[in-house]
Length: 157
Image (cartoon, rainbow, N blue to C red):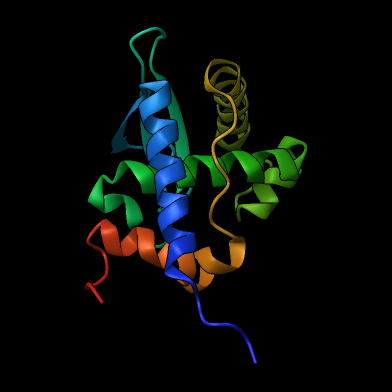
């Protein structure tokens, strides 16, 4: 029989995200994506910092999480998007994995833009804490559910 979810795990994960955000001093702003024509779930996130020019990161928000403008959810989505970019390898493989047309010039431009943003981001602030499993994200369980609840997407317990 599977173990029940331990809320302390989600609490610790949320603390890690808050610590990362506070330590880096970045501010995340949700904006329309220039690439929404490619994928209706595309959302832009501007990463602002006192020390560097703003970075634009496009993520695919299939669950509508960023409608809340929640910084923690935005940070998790940036981390997930960067992971998918890394796992995808080349532009064509990444595009197919995202359900995009790899032959579309706009997809190739988006891949280049995201790759450059990822490199700049990681160089400036390092890795984002990987605190939400793929399974929890897709099933809205565990830490993903706790983050969505705190963002106001789900009713309190």
